[in-house]
Length: 361
Image (cartoon, rainbow, N blue to C red; front, side, top):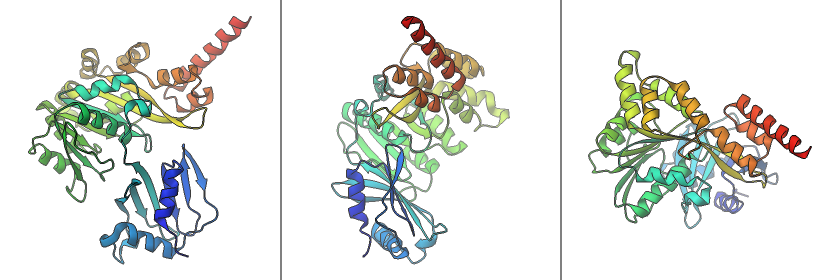
């Protein structure tokens, strides 16, 4: 019996899976709330792999496809879109389907802080959303873009690899372009976007210096740019950005970067006590003080400022996790596991236990 990929994907969507893994010679598996669950009543064959490729790639399938690594989008109407990665492996072939709902959730529905709505009101600059793979960066960006779409009369251009969430024009006009189909690189996509009367540009990822420099130039000429980086925290993101430039131009580059970056949002999805996943965020809004610290290379001062801040526009990952722990959303073990500054977190947890014990006495 041939494996019915559409039926399996529909069932996976209804089970609220985030990812679907299809391996040749193995049972399919789902990622639900961060954990992998195996479906043991089915084993995928090499013929299944070929049929899935033919069905999901359609006219793009050739006999050579089975030997390639491919990223593409597959859609089941009235169900969801799926970002697909196919790769050749030792067992013949493997698919990873990332489920992308048709409906774009609001910030409130995602559990994101209200302050992020202010990032949708900027007229220029760059906002970075960072974090590991699977942290919900694209989902957070989609909620910000959709908020702009609903509230502002702008032209938004997205350049993605591939296009994930689809937008319907509301107050804004939205142009969506896919890497490999509509443009050959983020750099060229951004270069041509500047000739298409944009107000806001979403770049799927900053991967090289040329793309970053183009993003800086776009922000300096009155455009608002959103993008992602795979970094581990706000300070790590600043270091990564500074690392794109050679040392002989570092001073000028650092000043331009400090002036154009509006904010860094670092995100993780953490398991909650009720078995779900919720975002924990580190936020660094570039105030005049933060920009001056960046220009002068005082990153340790930024870290100290973040630790002391009581404002929603500047907060550490630890502060976010601690708030979730205090509200019994996560356990102390989860707070420690996802902390970016584990010594500080350990000291806080010890302090909480000590103050609790003293109040009982």
